[in-house]
Image (cartoon, rainbow, N blue to C red):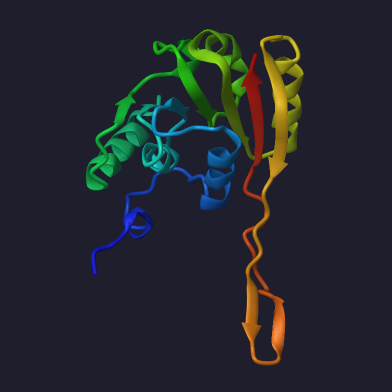
Length: 190
């Protein structure tokens, strides 16, 4: 049997920590992207989020400023045979070249530094999602969002996954779960 996308994804080369499937699902379900969408993923790392987004959208621009991670992601996209991703060794803090975007995802230490560029690059009614490991980043980011009136905060989410064990006479949570990975801050451009 041929391996499916998720099985192939398990075999890619890793660099930095990756965004987990549970969080990718949140991004897909809260941003209304579809087969005609054009998205930008910044702080791409190993390319896991870009690769997942590419399955559902028309085009993904993938920005990664770290040359080593850029090369890893580029190799992974080739391994996965993904054709609708354009990867760039760019620093999004310096600007966004693309426009008319339907979604921007940010896995960066200071996503607030991108807001001014994102305002120009996103279509009206489109989304920006920041993936932030700690709550102090969320506070800093959302405080800065208040200075950018073209954005509204739609949701601030933490997605906790817990598997269950079901056997004859047993129905309980597994002892381990994939608990906190990050907070997802979903913005919408007005």
